[in-house]
Length: 64
Image 1: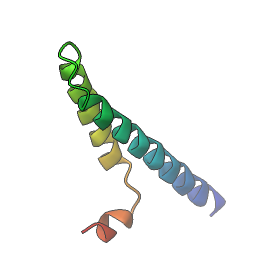
Image 2: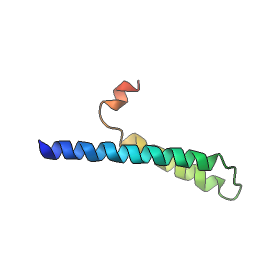
Image 3: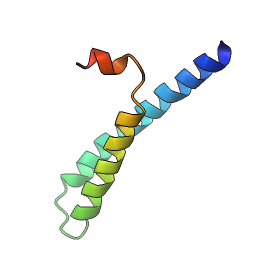
Image 4: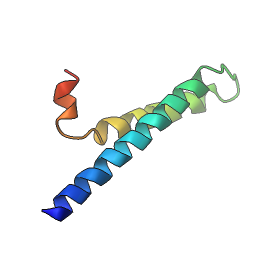
């Protein structure tokens, strides 16, 4: 039982970290740096995908 809770805690922690990273990536996209705009959008999309993959069970239903 303890291992299951530890895994859940790690998943929640990872999701929170990635959510913060997504906010930072969105800030980068807002800078309108012509040379890096494509990389910023790519980074944001990759992080957004990871946020979706790490969404803890139950939270997805609450967001609906």
